[in-house]
Image (cartoon, rainbow, N blue to C red; front, side, top):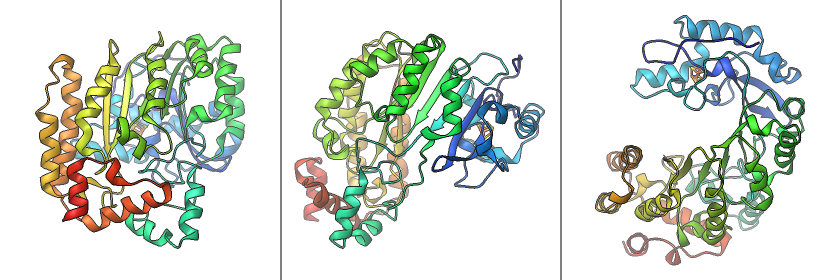
Length: 416
Ligand code: SF4
């Protein structure tokens, strides 16, 4: 099924490109697929927005050609705001750029053909970052045991506003009918998006990439993974080189000891070596760094910007910032005192980034300043809760915040 579509997504229409090219496999019960959607935005915390029954029996092509997808496509190109896409309609009502408006950002070819696949794999990961949980990294299992054994789990849950879960809902999708289909159809999927866990930590992902190479289809395929960027070694880089282009989102929340503290048990030195290998790949489309903003790193974001800018070199770069969730957990920046939030803003605004200036840089920094302004506006300063979350995790990881965090933050945590 290949056709041409001439519409583009714009504010005045309802067109979205994803249902015409992409299939998203995000909602699983272990290795059983619960629903197909055209994008990850349609996930509404378990509501079956596309009303699927028996999704797990279908392969991606059958689902893409199903009546449900047809109905959605017809609505979106004829001005009907299909109920399944309420995430986008709600955002647009609030004046926010909705995901559909950038649905052609990475693939602007006007075509009607299944060629993009967006897959969640499992919670296998090599790190246990401060803002994460067992839901996204299996490494937390050991720490969970520590908290349980020491009767600290209730306190941890309270300090993180219940973010620290003891169950994982991430799938084991790499032993599914849908993954087998992908292995057998590498020529069909030309933009492959994978998120985990850490994709490069999973042997099945390496097996899939190798299959692309042996099928000679890697040269037509773009990889776009959410990765922590720690596993760019000879083996993975050699595979990367065989692909048409690479456009990964790399998550990193600090430099030097800040990285060591947040991205436990990895070290910044090892991460930096891995990234220095990555930036030398000849087929990178752009460097994309994603950072989760918390009270731990907000006073060090000027250093983060300088480092990421220096890594970017000749590449096009994009920075994205997200506030740690939930917004009332101990390490949320909403719990910092306003004087420290003002200080973090001053540090960002008073630095001279002129060597690196670009339109993009200005936009990215604006979103960072907006996050700080939001925390000032919705300020719920709470030193006790912040200290509780920080020190509970210090205990399990044998770290001491005084050796890692900004000196002004340490003073406030200790002395006021
Ligand atoms: S309109 Fe929005 S929710 Fe619907 S498919 Fe497009 S991006 Fe997804």
